[in-house]
Image (cartoon, rainbow, N blue to C red; front, side, top):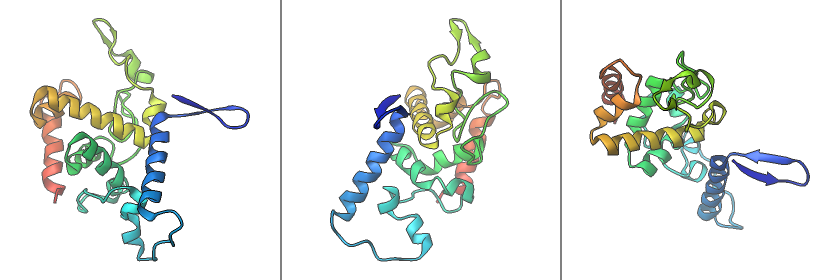
Length: 195
């Protein structure tokens, strides 16, 4: 966490939030230019997907439900950063949380991509060297959609690099003891909704 002092009490702001705000400011002023007139008004649907507002054009198929499409720019941005397909990330999020940033599973996974945190129920999972998720972010951090997407997409990319195959990466990402059924569900959603 980064600490920012604003005339008095200390305000703790997650680094991911600061980075997101700086990126948004850079994109706004870089694209709009200082002192330029505001963009012309257009219909609300095009404004919602405007690169000026979101920083990236949506690359998630419009076939996905609205609960997923509301995260379109964030999903696209993190997919691009990790070299993943935005529709694949959207499929994983649809399977994991249905697009609910506050989703909390019966095993303790948190947020859009249902990442296991170091605390809460997940702290009870023990591996041979201690708690399995001790090096993970907290549940509170993972409830921030931007942080969750950043962490979860990095985790998926790491599993893909390690396993060399998306089905195997999804097998490793998903719940234990379900075999490839989780991976196959995500890949099925991906096949059904992608452009």
